[in-house]
Amino acid sequence: MARYKPYNLKQDKFIAVSYADQIVAGSFEHALNEIVEEHLDLAVFEQRYRNDDTGCLAYDPKVLLKIVLYGYSKGIVSSRKLAEACRRNVVFMALSADTRPHFTTIAGFVRELEQAIVSLFRDVLLYCEELGLLGKEHFAVDGCKLPSNASKQWSGTHEELRDRQEKMETAARQIVSRHRERDEREQHGPVAEQDEKKLATYRVKIQKIKTFLSNAKKNLGPSGNERKSNITDPDSAKMATTHGVIQGYNGVAVVDDRHQIVVHAEALGEGQENHLLEPMVKATRETFAAIGRTPDVFVQATLTADSGYHSAKSMEYIVNSDVDAYVADRDMRRRDPAFANAGRYKERHRKERRRRTGSTPPQWFTPADFVYDESKQTCICPAGQKLYRSGGDIVTGGYRGAHFKAPKRACGPCELRRQCLRHPERTAQRQVVFFKGRVLGTRREPPTPPPAIEAMKRKIDSPLGRWIYGRRIATVEPVFGNLQNKGMRRFTLRGRKKVDAQWKLFTLVHNIEKIANYAAA
Image 1: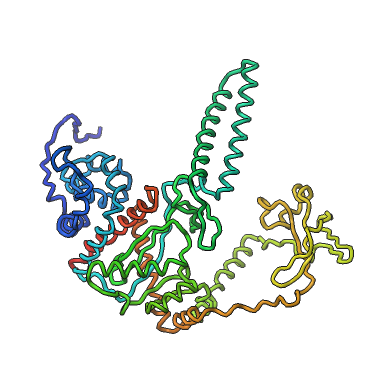
Image 2 (image 1 turned 120 degrees about the vertical axis):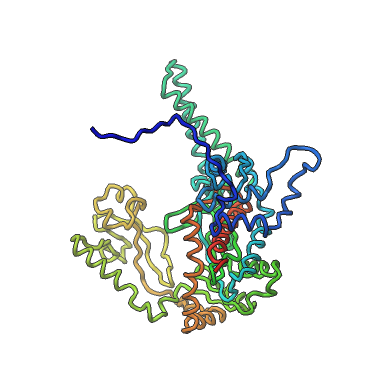
């Protein structure tokens, strides 16, 4: 019979822990502790407290800042989990000197950092400059879209939100009507209880929308069109990402290329970036001027940005402000001989997949498959249904055409929907246009690009321009990858100022890690 070593859980062991020994030299926590204790001016926090003579002793901002930044570096963003780590994790205990602040204290500290965070960020940047970690030769700017503490289901224009409110009011009235009928018949049960819960939920949501519509102004974009507003966090925005549509903020960063130090960070509630180049350049100049090192950092430095930051206004600003910038446009790769055959592999793989699976590309009906009688102005679809004229002739791209629509009652049950509609799951009816010819005087010549755009194209298409722009992706993209790899994948606060402070905390973690890794090199 096998024999095992005995064990006993009912025994005690006392372990002597030296908190100073837990902060190992060369580690992130060692760099964090040194920076907070010796290189940050925390006088900005003094005005928050009024306990000089009376009141409870406050937690030292140094302790709270170390808890938050170390927690973020480990992917712990929740204040409750940070408070728990201060009780269970020996490194947290060491950094906080075993003070164990309550989670509400930590949450309040992070929430109120918006006034102090700029000063803290610049202090760390100044320390990076003193250590020689900044090259100030090339900067890259880009944004990282992260979800926020708000649901995209609560987004919409004022008209859309009002329609949603009316639908919920109609549903609430129907529940009340059913409730009265059950009262008359004296029928009560689980269905009635469920309806009462739904009614209470509808009333809360209706009141929430009413309050928002009565107090909030329409959110207008740069073009004057109304953008969707979010009831929970009006400063956030709906954004399209590679992982779908999110409700969140765009964390923009300007990064130095020597050691990928973030020199400016800002969170914005907008997905469009084509107007952000000017404010990012101005903010970077202001940051370096504030730390007293460089009057104008862009005198000798280059700046790169992807096509999201390209616009006529931004290019005009670059020219007029003497910034040596290289900003891609959406057709840059099409002009690059190196990408002349970039799509050949995609097409080859598509053909191989069709041959392997035996599938064929979808074939949709074209106007040639419809029977059009110009003299009688009639149109018959491939299923034999008659389409009707939709108004008079339309003009598209300078061409006049006859516009026909199919009846919804004919398209709904039609067996040819998938051959007729590209998106049969959401398109109700087929439309078709038969063009008659170009309208006189409507020939549209392509607009002449502004001189600043043409100058940027020539600049970035040069061998030197392509080489400099090629450095962009290795400068800024690893920053976002590092932050998300550490678990900083979403914002937990609401409101642009608070989220901006949290984004700066995220980038501070990245910069402190760079100090820990390269300061001794």
